[in-house]
Image (tube, rainbow, N blue to C red):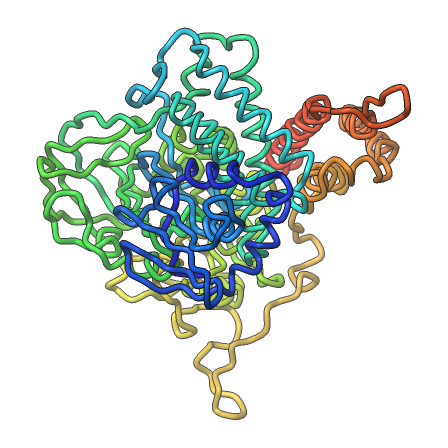
Length: 630
């Protein structure tokens, strides 16, 4: 069903609370039937026709249904009817949190989404005071904040126990209500995690193509970890600020900045934001960003590259800025490095710098091991607290060939990397460009990529440029200033310089000979191979994700893999899996053997311990895969 206005979480919760218990169990089935009901009306009032005699009317103020009385049904059971609840359940949920969108690392990180980038709705701990309770710099939590954190924990425990297969409208609404309460009391980091979990549950229920179980697993781990920390014994004063988060990030005045364009990256977030983030470098080599993010999808991201940069009145588009420069005065920026916009900011167009020139070339001079440690440390931080560009890698690589949907490349240190697409959406040229680069065997390239902290030696390619004007590489147009943004610029076969038959050489049928990707066996007997994932850690990850998908009941019936993990020398992992299996099966019973109420907290604690261990072990393995073998 499309065309429905957004509704606030309290409105949806009130509609479900009004239903009798027997009807509340039927909401999911009613919502499935309601998806075929016709919708008509305007932005201010929308009518959903259930049948010839029944309609549901939604009255929106500024596009949002803000009161339960604004959702009306014409049936005799209204307002305590399934029609009204089903329509509200299908409407998008309005998130009133003040947003300060920033780019996030790709899919497998903390998980705001399944795409390569995502939008964070909360700011850093250095931002303004949290609305409704306490400040990020407060010394202890208030009673209301603890109650809100406990509410989030209780709902998250119920979500984990039910799994995606058992989470319907009622449980998702309870989570949204807890998120609303947490945000109102200043628990912005926990609220942001809860919002992402609710969105993931909705995507799983609707079988949306962009749903990724790995992202939902990471988001649920974050939600449980943060809410558990906040509801328990008061955390140390130094940890309270990062645990709370803040509604908005603080922007401080900056002295005059001389900036050089680096690259532009399209953003498509599951939270509904899309646009572009442009990376800039100052004279000292520090990275900054200027973003254009707003509600939308891949279409907006594809067109945002040609939108005018909102810093000052330079008149440059984001794609032009990556090949030019800016002189900024009166500007503001966050601690992490995101430039602010405003009428007081003045910016003038200036000359840019190539990737082989100062100050940009210094980014590629950093040792690989140092870059990997920096990127891994950054990916472990909450996105709003992450310094701009800290999760990026600046590598000089030689293309080895294509492997399925990726490209193998070797660094000067001998590490073999797997280059993957940063965004799978067909409206963006990432995949076509990467497929073409896989044919440029032997090409030496400078690469800007984002490290994948969950998979060994894997990098999402964002931009590339030739190392030299001669030899295998890329022959880019002069207007591209020596690099190609893989999310916006479309490479062509004629731009490849390889050791194989030139791409322009005609073959039978009049088509150019593009050559076939060189199989790994032809790289040479002594050529290194890409690092593969650890089977034991993969098994451990499947245990974690299986619970999120199937809930506690699946884990109670599943065979324990404790013995296999211990054989692989993951003794702690094996112990934690065994403890989780025991907690899943251990249910209190009364004198007659009947299962009594079980709040599921012991099971949630055991799952959280396993999930945190798996994350730490995977990160350690990924870091080790980047280090040169001795």
